[in-house]
Image (cartoon, rainbow, N blue to C red):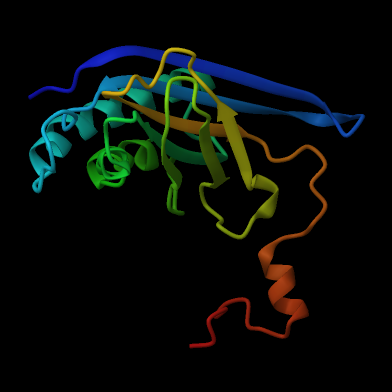
Length: 200
């Protein structure tokens, strides 16, 4: 059964001043979301989620990736990226996870932006207007803390109890005045091998 999409949306946020100081380069955050009918809601406990994953995840991955790339202008320009799902109250968190934690969803985005790191994620459950949290990290460098960001937004009428909100997030730039260093400096300070942080 094809995924039923009730609405989509795109949000762009630009931070010009942070901490009372103008940003040398404004931070731009992008959110693309789709509100979909939960294909498992109202059916009791469903053991096999694969048919709906295979039908819905690629559609959402392709759609939301295109929305982000069209808004940003190119995949190369995306620096930070992440994903999120919010399940309505008649569903399980597993239902949202099913749609975003599959290569059939995430590979569209990873390939479009040429990413090396995994997609940061959040999956929660809530009513309409619940917070949609999209954690971001640098698409090529998991230790680059300047790009540890979180997009927070909400949709006044979603998710309904039998819906799921699926979202992708992107950043151009990191926090405007980042000054806590990166993971690699911590490893050096602790006397650990940056190339082999696990010591194996």
